[in-house]
Length: 418
Length: 154
Image (cartoon, rainbow over all chains, first blue to last red; front, top):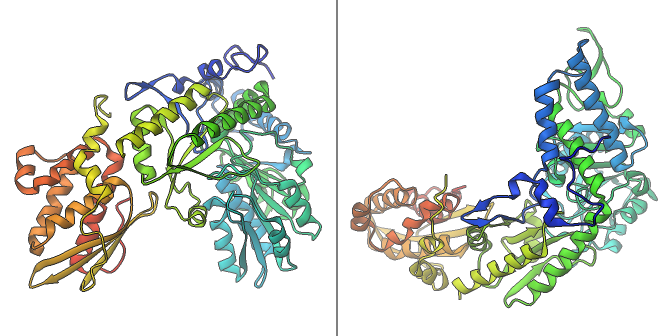
């Protein structure tokens, strides 16, 4: 894979977040007259020029449908699309490219497993086990499945630091449990769950595990073979890629046995009005013309991250989290929500007597973009007895100076409400 | 396009901050004969409006719940303004307030009809906060019409 000039500013000279931020055109702008401080990365990250250019280049030069045409453009588009499957295979260390299914995002990946694997494997009286810190996208598809089948949805509890209780988890691994679905990293709290151990414990009882990796892949090295997960779902747009594209990894043995999720073109081998023979993996699960430019953009994003090195990203973000946590705990009237020992750079907090919505509006006026609300994790908010939090979530391009700007912003909010 | 010149204090005026910290009529009305909930699930804003409505008059009104400063101050000032008003007067105020926060009015009209409620005129510069300002009002209208379902302005 070639590294063109617009790919990565420089990593060889040492990790320099401020310099890397120049790779992201949207970061270099004023918001309400102030330099943008973008701290809403857990919602979506900004996109580097290499990703934007890869998408533009596809539409300028290679735009064509894939897997069908005999003409040159279709050949080029097909090659570019399938090359990303290989890039993705390497990126998550899958054993086979056929285990990489392109989907719209994490939500569709989980729905695919719920509708295909779930509907064939989960029966009345069975249980699906999720955790107390799941995003709604890893709750609702299982609720729908359980309702349809007359199965139960069980929940692994957590402590008040936002860590899963593994003793309780073990008790919930019953003979009725047909699947465990758990977040690798919590979007609302930043907790990194011990998924390797969670998977091993489930496998000891013959239970497969789906990991929601949406909040993990942008921040830490993922190796699906080392984890030994059965399914791993993630989105492109949180890892510097475009929206509307994501990946479902599944073990080949399981995917082979699963019925198709959607029917249509590309997922068939032959069709008569009497019978359709389904295509082989991975095409069986990719009905219709896919998001070709999205796949190509995602490929560029994975190359970008690989060039920088996820270990470098993780180290930088760990430093940022330590610094931000130190700084925020010095401020009065602040309660940090999510204080797990293992965390990614997510700082969720509430200010005494001030609603997160007001915090968000005032920070926005200072050019600081944060997320306020329940973060699509209402059960987490209920657990902590709060309606919402303010969440600052960091990416590879954020700096300590931006943490300082956030702290000044919080102080300004507190002064206004004093 | 958002005007660059908007000032945060246009939104958070002193009177709004004051009402959000010390809201008026912030309790459960014991002899209410109508009530309705307003709930914006994305923000978590959640209010219940209690009405005592007799002979076409809001003889008493109160609210309970939690939300941001804008939604809470709006609920507080609304209850203060509506006491003693008829249903049609309440409906007229609601319509005028809605026009105010969505910037479809002129100042003279607002002052005459809305009085102190014009402190919410800054909300129109912050489009995502309109739903906060209007939540209690929708709940109040729902209570007046005695529709039992919870309302949302999201």
